[in-house]
Length: 193
Image (cartoon, rainbow, N blue to C red; front, side, top):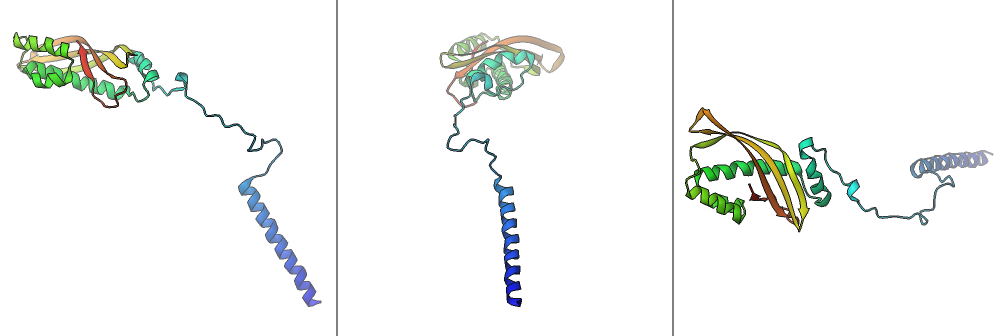
């Protein structure tokens, strides 16, 4: 009888192990309720992003026109653009004031370069002028057409003449920057002032 009791005990131990394994499998794999579709019957639809679903970051009120660029150019980043526009403004004005035509040539279109060159040749630039402050007032216009992105930015700048803070000159300018739509680089060209 001792041997028979051992078999009964082994069966109970194996039953407990089997119940434990089933319980663990069910908690890991889940259970089918009958209301779920068979995986072979599910339709896998590739969802295309529509312009309404594009992630357009929150834009300030004076930057709302950039929404159009975001809808057409997925790689556009308005913060990088505006920061670059501000730097470009400083570099271009500083180069103009110093009469540095070679720097200007790489940053502006041919028409703008010709206008700057004419002003430098006639002595309209002032090498003693320095930046005091520069603010981007907003985006005047933005468009994507003909394979080009074109953005007009409003600037307010203040410049000091000959290190004299009493001689601050305040200017308001609207500059238009342009680059090919297919370009992934950060370089924009000034095409209008």
